[in-house]
Length: 372
Image 1 (cartoon, rainbow, N blue to C red):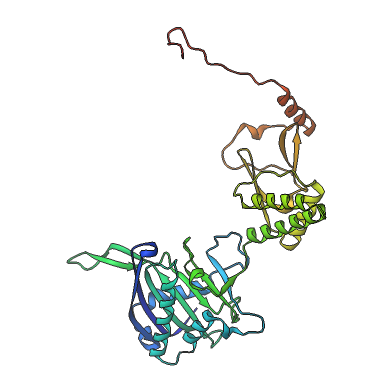
Image 2 (image 1 turned 45 degrees about the vertical axis):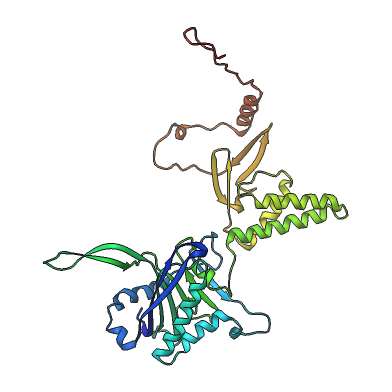
């Protein structure tokens, strides 16, 4: 990918202290136009980052809540356009700047807005406007946040060999914003942008307060399941307000727990119908659970088809059916097994529960003092 960089501004943000007592300041180093950028020593560093930012793949509905790359959409009230969104207007000024000073002034405004975000950290801020001339004459906006590596050494020359460098930009943890979002080569979405933040600190989500993001798969599934349970409660207790309120309170407690247990409220048919509704909307939904110390990971669509839950006496049993086994590296005796029929296994489990457990009492030896 070849980019025609029209303007680029370079700032350094410093943060001293932590929390509410943090003191933030910034310094503008340089703003370049197309000619000065092409001759600068940052071109070799940034050209590859521009291409990497455009090519970086993203799911509109990420599989995890902590996905580093997301598509954001500018928020606007019904009946209002993009120009009603403050974040869009900030980007629009940078894209419309007609001079070096104009781009610098708009970049300065953006950096000051970034510093007001509680999650903002120190480092280098680079704003750039570039065109991907092969596909479009529409300007793209890149916002990059680079961290620093302190006290490193580089090879200087034959005489001194090593030269100490106090601060250097790290290319390993660059966070970026691309506007507009490019779903495919040659296409762009004016209402959307793409963010990439590789750390747990949500720099850009805090900075862009008027941008919304599609919910992650777990968040989406949680919402749909809660709605299903609420509908079930309404149908089960149409006039029993006290019971209904009790069930809703239990639902809130259940949803709020990080680790949840089997509720034993719905029949297999009800659970199968609920899972089918979710799978029809998104076939690749995952199901993860742990039975004591054994972790099982599969697709939600496997419930009732290849994975079955049951009880033998008071013990839970998971039955996983399939046509063949496959073992990873490391040979074990289990691979030599000739499996029993399921009925025999169930009888063995039931027999194990019926057997009395031996109680062991520690007795002091004759050489030891009595424990009292």
